[in-house]
Image (tube, rainbow, N blue to C red):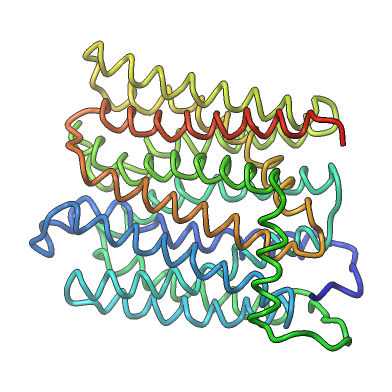
Amino acid sequence: MTSPTTRPAPSGLLIANLLAQLAFGLLAMTICLPSMQEWGAIFNTGQAAVQLTFSGYVVAYGSLQLLYGPLSDRIGRKKILLFGLAVAFLGSVLAALAPNLPLLVAARVLQGAGAAAGMVVGRAMVQDLFQGPERTRVMAYVGMAMGLCPPLATIIGGQLHVRLGWQANFVVMAVLAVVLFVAAWRGLPDHQKVTTVQPHWLRAMLSSYARLGRERAFILYVALLSMTTATFYAFLGGAPIVLGSYGVKPDGIGYYIMCVPGAYIVGNYLASHMAHRTGERRMMGIGQACTLAGIGLVVVLALAGLNTPLAFALPLMLVGIGHGLLVPPALGGTIGLVPALAGSAAAVAGLMQQMTGAVGGFAVGLFRHEGALNLGLLMLGFALCGAFAQWLLHRRLARPH
């Protein structure tokens, strides 16, 4: 395995660079969400087929992290990141030129495969540069930055869709991929590999994953993160449809979607200040309670017949706050259990998050959404699975070693 030989003091510019690399994949994922509302009519196909542009991206985004993680441990973070950005650029260009839905789905898969590098390398670099409660604090700052992505991306994407056409969203992502390529090449430190003789990369990768698989706490951390991501991606995939049933047009969707990521930023801000005082396990419990309360309120209001955009969006602000408190310590615990395998741990967590997220996003297309009830029940199911994993994790961590 590899390890950094030096730990340069993180500067504000370096942290901003890392945040941008981490955020790129989520920006690419969500900027076209407003367009999905109309792709069925544009390409003369059903909504379930349109959802493949989302779930296909998410599957590739997660799957390639499984490869990028150990490779970044072995041959260097920067090399993997630069390769991924080049692939994402190609996928964005092909998506902008796609004449039909099957080719658009294929381009989105390629785009997600490239964007995966930024997520796994960024998380691993946080492990390289920070430790302990400070790492949780930085993860909270990462969460704040990433929380801005869905609302900003959907607002920008909706405006571009209305004014310049849906292809403009992919042109923007292609330009951003070039900018981030230059920023990574010039501004990120190299991750030096050790000089000892190493086994074949595939054997080393499988050995890394086998080692992580023996850590019960790691498995539970990943399960918790996965269910949390599935809950959020079900919201991202279903919100445009639910809001569309309430008469909200593509250029207005982002303003309602921002309620959840905006609250997520608040939750991350609270987490950054609570990390040293409250304790990570207690903070995670508070976060899960907020999440379940928010989704439960959506279901109750839908059953009561209160079908308005605000009745759907405002209660979910509790979900955003809850996830903001829950995710940073869970991410920190995931990559910190075995520090030498930070890249591999980030890859496994990323894969499982995106795979379950893809299930959440695709499952949205299997139900009718003339109101918020079905989406609320779907989100509640994922959240309850996450709460069960968290309960098992807390029992595991509470045992004396």
